[in-house]
Every structure is written in structure tokens, then in C-alpha cells.
Image (cartoon, rainbow, N blue to C red; front, side, top):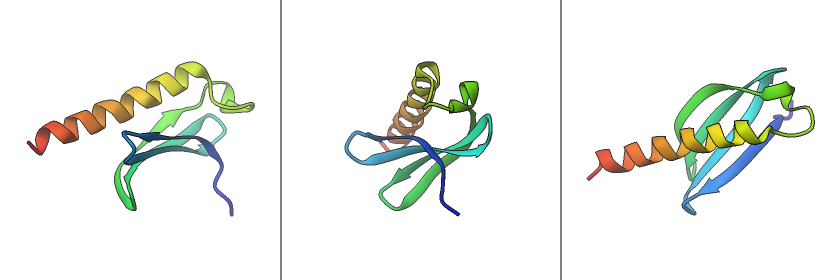
Length: 77
């Protein structure tokens, strides 16, 4: 079965952020550092993302990723 990727992005040239549909209005957001999974959480998909992700959803997903990576970076210093 093929994954239904709703959105993906690269952050800081290092991290890959992906949202994969799991249900009609839900998806899993994952953050990877190369091949290592760092974080995964369930997120909503406005309007079921039938024609692509909603701009507000993308903003929320970017914020989740940025906050996670920033927090992770500050805990390693």
C-alpha cells in the first residue's frame, strides 16, 4: 500500500518534515533527521486536504517542526 503524502518540507537543509494521511481528516506528522525518526504526532487535515493542504494547516505544521527542532537544539548545548 502506498503512503498518501499530503505535505513534506525540508528544514535547515537537514530535517525532513512529512504529513501522511491516516484517515479522511487526520494525518501523521513526522520529523526525521536523515534516516532517524525524531518525532511523530497526529495532526488534523482541514477539509480532508482533498485538493492539497490548507495554508493554515501548513503554518501549524511548520510551527510544530520549528518548535521541536529549536527545543531539541537548545537541549544539546
